[in-house]
Image 1: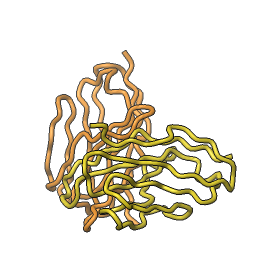
Image 2: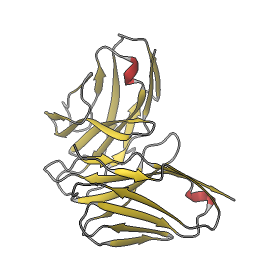
Image 3: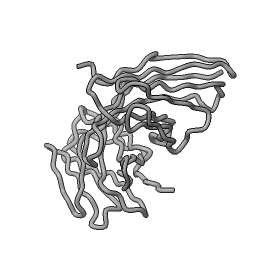
Image 4: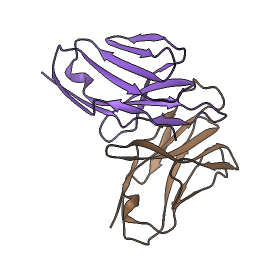
Length: 112
Length: 114
């Protein structure tokens, strides 16, 4: 059974601080996705990283895929209250359907 | 486009009752799937379909049935609800095949089984 451990589970920070969320596994994934979920809504895809060592930037968010394609990180620079939400990582399992294995999520609260 | 729609938004059931959670997408996506989201456990795949007439089990299929008679619709059936099925259920769809295809989620159905 493939598992994706996400940490930390909760983060409460002040506006302007930096933070990093980690996803780790002992399994190799075809790619890794990061989602953001607002209360009462479904997850929305932020980014997909495919190649080992790949780094993608989305404004103040930086996503990195580990060299061995087993882990990933999300770094937010100068967090803003609008960044508040649940962040989920999901590993794409190699195979015909490309199933997703989700981490448990990181609930981020950014206070003004 | 409406994207992925789910009905109902909320449902309360008694143990042993049956119900069907509806999911529809208007993007002509081949792949559709059902997940449940529980606190501290992320989303877990229940069943999925790679096209009309084709379904398969995910991580936690017990207690749930699915069918896919059309490309657009992918209903999830609970034949005899149990309190352990209290959860938030999400339907998702994506174009088939490529690993980088974006998966679109519906707004969810919140189910409480008493």
